[in-house]
Image (cartoon, rainbow, N blue to C red):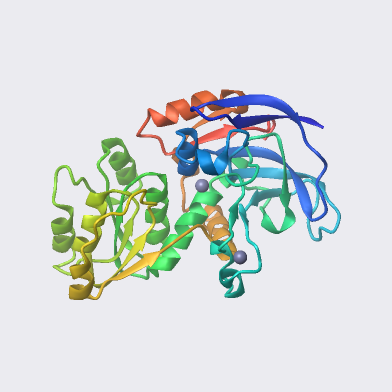
Length: 343
Ligand SMILES: [Zn+2]
Ligand SMILES: [Zn+2]
């Protein structure tokens, strides 16, 4: 069968070509992809930061939603026509992490849509174990936000945010904003630190307290807001040295700091502060099955105002322009590609 697929070719270029796709193999299902959002990681790929890993023949994309179009042999419990999302992780099942039940951080983890073919194509064959079935009444454009929302669910779970705790989110981009929403839903009293005024305005519209480090001393403001205590949980989502400086300064005694950002170079960390205040630094990477289930639940409860979060929706033919626009628009939250015309 011939389908349309967007392929990353290096040098900030995607081509949209026709290619043939085989029927799903045993253990696989074939998806009619409805929507696929553009992730921060996809932007890194587009900018060439991941060329050695991705190559120049890959269809990327993983923040998707779709409809089951065909089912391979030996697949139980799924039906053609079901609305689904894919949890894009492929673990080896035979390493210390997998043995310990931490398949999501398998030593040999393959991220589907980065290390293998992804969802910026009309039809996509994926392993059946990656599928989460959606309620039929969930809008498929909204459902494409489940993957980034699951990231936020995992981060908040790692930070063990509980009722009444003071939370600081450093960085108000898409993931920071989703963390803030999930942390507030968990009972946290959330402040967002961000330098972009448009993002600050959006955060305020969502009802968050905001601080701009360009105008105020954020650590000092947090101390003042909390009667000198500091934030019980800090999420470092900025990926910057000032963010790393702030995370230790703003944390309370025994504060938990969740490292969400992927720091490309090794930042300087104030280790003295870890001793002085008995701080904890917690790693967080992707998500578990339970985080996906939680994200689906939060979405159907309306925790996220999807329509305001989705900045724009373009067609697969316009994917090049969508990536170009995203790199030049620091205000954007989520850009999405609509792949199935009747979705
Ligand atoms: Zn993503
Ligand atoms: Zn493994």
